[in-house]
Amino acid sequence: MATHYFRITLLVLSFQIIQETYAAPIDPIGGESISRSQAYEILKTIVLGYLTHIMTIRPTSDTDQMNTLYWRATFFVYPTIGIGTAFKAIFIAYDGDKILGIDEADKYIKEIDENKKQHWIEAWASDCWLPLKEFFLSKFSTPGSKYDSSGNRTEEKESSRDDFRTKAAELRDKIKKEAEKDKDYTHRPGDNVFYLAAILHLMKPRQARRAKHCILNSSIYLGLEANEAQVEKYKDNIIPSQNMRITGTGIESTYQAGIKPFTVRYLSEKMLDQIHTAYYLDATSYTEICITIGQLVYTVIECIDTQGDRWAKVIMIIYMTMSVLQTVSLWCLHKQISALTILYDEDINIVIYEIGDLPSESDILNPDLYDKEDVIGIQTRIGNIRNRMPNSYYMSSHEDTSSNREEDTPPKNSGPPQENSKPPTILYEGSFLEKIIQKEKIINNNGYKTYIEYHTYSYITAGCGGMTLSLLAGIWAGYNVHSVTQWLVLAWILSPVLLVPMFYLKNRLKIRKKPKLVIILWGIVYIFGFIGAGEFHFYIFPYKELAMSHYIFQSL
Image (cartoon, rainbow, N blue to C red; front, side):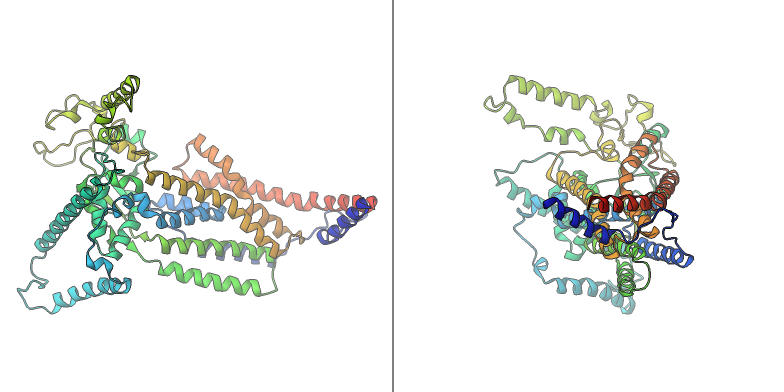
């Protein structure tokens, strides 16, 4: 009896899934063909959906045109990968203080300026009123006054910057004093997170938020010089300045190296002072918002319309969903009109960071904590760290650099040489700058762990969640249609599975910086994929329907 009910259930399901069967005298390739009007509708859907979608894609932080082309091609082939970039930006913006490390300083800040407590509307009004006030006073002020546009305002600006640095240093010292009272706090030499927190705390709320967005969006770069051997070694990780849209003290440098948000805290205080100007680079996303709203309205109207191929409209739904996610991410983590570059002209002692992560000298000498073997191991590690440093690093003067290797010496800048103006070697194996170029962590702190976790979780969500949401949209279109459009769209939705072999080929062939070759590879893979989908529909599927229906009816 149970077997009989099971057969009846299969029969009912077969009538729902199989819309038509083909008898033996009929041509089994009598499937549904695609007309010119349908082809035009599908093409229009793809073009309109893609063109509106790429207007909302988050721009690359390095503003490199080749990388932009690479990502636009990627979002056309795999649009659901945008879930990863969008979620990553949203997560990073939500937990930005932890990634930057300034959450450690926030609990130690006791004295807060009264201006920081004002309502956000008042802060916004203040940010808008001050520039207008400066403009009208400079235009209509009397000659010789401090607001006279013809006067020298450079000295006033420089004095204002000096005052800001002084206040930041004072607040940093106050934070340190509060931190020293905490028994759980451990000071790491060279960690300037308190100074970074002081800078952001003294800025106006809106300015500080924009500066943090610039850092969290990885729009901070270090300007550097390198010789031919170094360029060949690090060619995959450094970008020529001429290919970027940048501003800052490192704009005249030949190459740029991106710095991750969790590493900014280890820059020198002289470099961190320039973070104060990052809020000028904040860009609005009003254009993306308007485009997304228009795309959303158009997609809803098209989906309500009963005419047309629903599977072609699934493409429109997927692009629209990705555009909404991208726009939300732009609202949570702002983009920048250009990247900020900081001149890296002095070496940062990487030894103090690596040794700072080791036990203190008092703890090493404590026999209750470490035995002789542990002490020997720690001292050996410290010795190995120091052996990686060039001899010139420990010289008190920069005059003698004859012991440096030729390939470690950066090229000289044009112009007359000045005495003691040449910095020591700053790019060598194991140096701070090399770790920045190779995107390695300095210390395995909470900011690094949080950033890596969000990066991993976001792209796992993009891989699994993207295909799941797209397949759920197929329920609305109907999986029992069995049209050519259905199989082509399904092949497109499931295509992210090809990312695994594509990443393998990209790493094996070292074509990361060759987007044209990547696009050609993707095109070849997709041609075979769509041909396979068509073959499956026209040849395999009709026979499968015939065999399946014959088996079910025979079993009954």
